Image 1 (tube, rainbow, N blue to C red):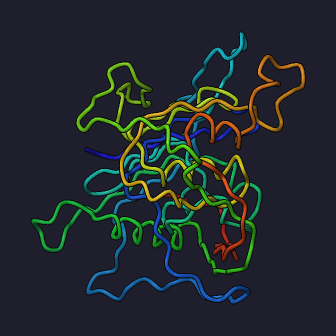
Image 2 (cartoon, rainbow, N blue to C red; image 1 turned 30 degrees about the horizontal axis):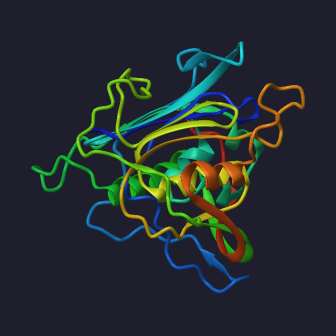
Length: 304
């Protein structure tokens, strides 16, 4: 089944965000010593370059991916992006260059720095695929192949140049709180007929729905993905140290730091209290090596 991801691009308004997350989480290569800079990795040398051979990139029209929801009596309009992997390529809608870079290099968005403002705000509709396979009977791209092809697309059409920097920085570790986890382990094969639905109208396992400011519902996600979606709210990298290996359903409600004082939810728990009381987990502040992808150069994408 193709993977589907829908993300909100309007974090300022804390609008609806849907994410279909894979169980694998993110795996980064071991970072160099703090303060050391290492060049961007070169694509492996192969008989044929790992690149899509049919690509369409267009500015997003803006209206197709708008959704609305009533939150505390107020209509919230959100702009969503869609990431859909096909056996022979990708079909992305309203995706920023920053999100594309994060996907291509298997890194979190808050670990990307540099570049002009449009990198994180302008949305693009991107379709790309491989029209000929070698060998001919191979019709399913692997995750690594698709990532390398996205890197080629960024280098060719966006003229992207990057390097990595690693430095000691504050991070949070997600651990099990006293009393143990309060997560409900998902049942294999559960179709979630009443659960959050993606832009395709179908409810999927591995999905997290942002229902409004500080309101989350998740179904069948690993704790590594809990760490991933907490990171943007905390503005720091979150490392999963729970040791839990299952997939879990949960709800989480907390009061964001930027919520107005007269909001009905202004007196709710902080994210730290909510994670501990509602999930049975704990966020512990520490320091560790943080690998950052730095954009040296990027241009708006060239015409089709």
